[in-house]
Length: 235
Image (cartoon, rainbow, N blue to C red):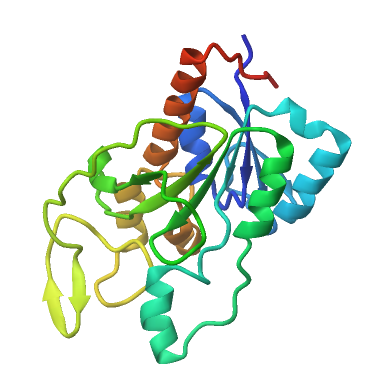
């Protein structure tokens, strides 16, 4: 049988795509920026506009699951804290409400990913690097649309994230895979900590979802559909 087809919106360099591929999906990524390191089928387009085209033309029916990781700067806890307090950064548009409306129109199961913060997303599942033995904590929340799975138990952290905090240096088993300076991880450290070896672009690594997260979600979705007796639509 063909592998079920997954639409990877706001795909960046393919952290989620790699995980879903490992889970058994064929992946098509969409991003508004050229992503030459994206290791799967890629479409350069505005994600919402491309989704509109698929819905209107019926192409969306080729897919079994849609995963979306819209920009998180507007409501990420890190941005709201340091950046906003210091007056850094720029204005960002919150895309989740219009994205969710379109995903509901598809009639397909979907996943919306966001980091901790105040983004208007349900926290149906929260995943952490320690659950998978990774070198990052990197909490991520996932809203599950039109499907559900058992919420995993959060695993206690083994220590702190390495780096400077309020003038004090802390060591620990995890690296900070975001930003630069202050003891943040190097590119090589981020690659090792998250299990991503196909890109060495810092911006892509700092925005990436560890593939292990998406692999867990993909396997959970396939198990849920199998239990329900639902056959995924093939590519």
